[in-house]
Length: 218
Image (cartoon, rainbow, N blue to C red; front, side):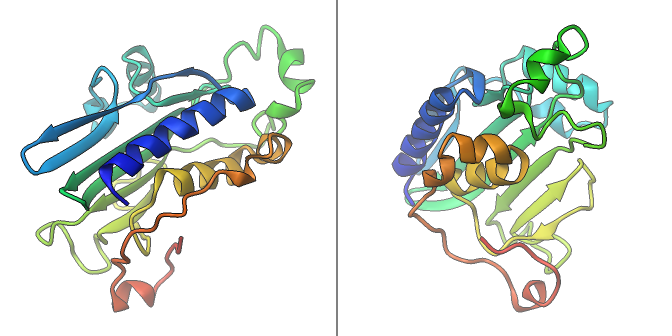
């Protein structure tokens, strides 16, 4: 998968989310070339550094939202980011994030609008706990520590030592499909979004030791 293909896939995903009524605000991707490197990010290059700081989650969310540091702002307020870095045609890093809203906007004022709309069926349950999700990839050997810090890994809930091994870097299409299928299931099927996918794959990076423990396979 090349930088251009990643860029085009993110653009197509945003269009599809708008059509399906799942995004109420969005920012299109940007692509920047620095020497041999290409970086795919968010138009306007908003800062995302706050997301890595040890601060109350509501503050992190509010700053990201205010800065429009997202590609997609979902109907429940969740912010989705897709960052990629390539050296020529080889992926060297990615950061794919879901930052759920710490509250459902307007729910207290108008709960009926949520309860009567099937798009919200999966996000208004009283027992539901929304947690941040992040798929990270870093190809640098200096950063890789077998099992402890896999090159490709999944972090849940902002836990600093939560690094669940993932078998390979993840394309934008596969990331979005994972999010929709698992957390917006009703809307996923109602909008016929199963067709969203990526025919492109990245080379596997999972080691023998990482494959021997619980891991995620795309």
